[in-house]
Length: 157
Image 1 (cartoon, rainbow, N blue to C red):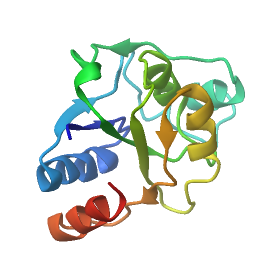
Image 2: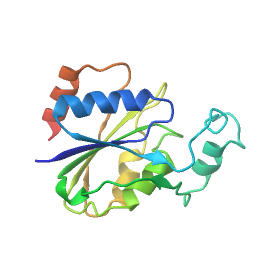
Image 3: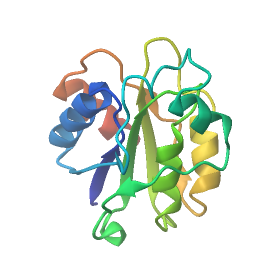
Image 4: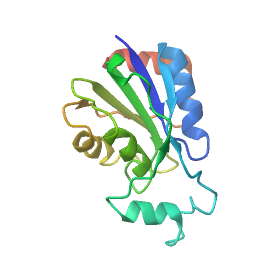
């Protein structure tokens, strides 16, 4: 069974977890990178005029992504990681999910957040990746080690 860990990380927190997860389970790694990088001002969720606020206010917003997964068809299981924004996945993750055919694949969300859970992210992701099985996923805050990540991944796939 071939696995991919795809992630978006605004500040590096999710990137660290994604890298550790990929190494722990022997998966390939793909960073969901925005065409226009986010600045600190863009990420200021308290500013209603910030880029992230505007994106999250617009359900149809799909920020452009740099690069693509070369052979998505080769993967059976795709772990998708992201920081929680407004209790769901950032819109750039929606861009990623809509770019591929996930039919018959298992998608496992994982997220990082200072204060909230996955919210409705798994349900939203299921609508964006028709034909995929989207599992409940898990918050991976702190610095989970390789053993913890491997045990979690093995318990669900």
